[in-house]
Image (cartoon, rainbow, N blue to C red; front, side, top):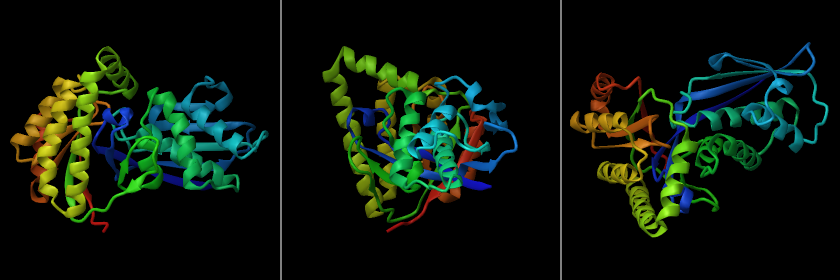
Length: 311
């Protein structure tokens, strides 16, 4: 048996604008993860067992566009294996689906690593990332590439599409509360809607994306200098711009407002929007009480994560 694990991720700043060449900041969330086991099988074919989504079957029975079939076949092509041995692949993930925590990318990364290692040709991070990005296109249409990048390298990154990733240092630990609306939020739809807005009035939206880029750069400076309280107002400003892009929702806005009222230093949606997650910058001593308030305000799940010092 060969086992691989990949973490979740959360976008701190820059979602949607990142698709248009502006920077984004994202970090891994190791409290949730996708775990993949690959083992030899006595039965011919490659069999998938993903009990969390009630998926069981041999991959040739899946549609040719199915994400799992696509990622497995891409690994086999990369390794130039036309007749793979009989295999069973078991997938267990604690990452909520369609919530902005990178569930699809995490499963892809873990599958690529486990399968290539089991076939005695473990792939380097660069190839893992490239293959996961190709699969992300099935999930999101025109993805930024940030999910697969953060999850592959499992470290905080400053990301500009088409440029090499930059790891950034955390000078002082800071704590985030992540709250899930419980509403599935397929990123492909919100990305497509923002593109329609941009196509209708590119000048207006380029200016909005520029503002987001300024926020992202200020946030990176705050994290690297240890001025983490400055992230709160930047989160609030970023959320307002995401509202302008029409990618928030009443449920997200309610949680953002509840977190701020409960003492969060700032809060915003994270990811594609229209559902999924919001996150709040909190003092560590306030994290549990803010989680309680958020659950009362409608959050289906809450998660506390601390970004540790990395400088």
